[in-house]
Length: 159
Ligand SMILES: [Zn+2]
Image 1 (cartoon, protein in one colour):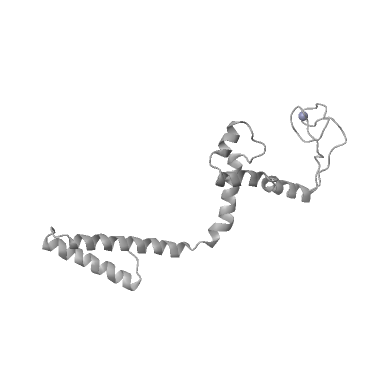
Image 2: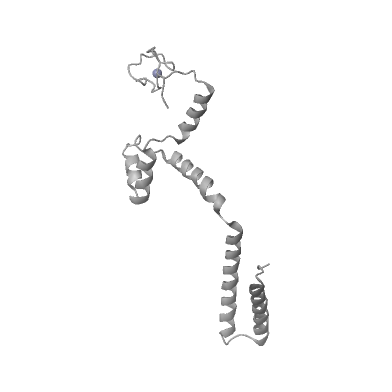
């Protein structure tokens, strides 16, 4: 997006003399403040998504070089990287936008239930194999196994 710089060289924020594109006193960009609706909208959106190459400068080391970003941050080299909270919010946004809608939560919850049932069956079967259980306990365990086994065969969930 093309920026429209002001011809006046007084800072609108602190009234200091501006020699470049930014005020050397407060850092505000000496930019035209009146915008039409469309540029206001695109400006606002791009403010949140326009990270130049900061994103990749931060994301790739985050994955490939553990501790690198922390050392950079502590050494004071911060402008070339995305601020940690911004990075976190951006990645969360991407996650919720692209990953969540494609998850089959129902199938996953059935899978967890199936795994729970398998675990329970395994535990009960190993209890059955041990010799130091009473006849009463044995019948109880066999009943439980029957119930779980029939649930498994009928594709039902553990209630
Ligand atoms: Zn200023």
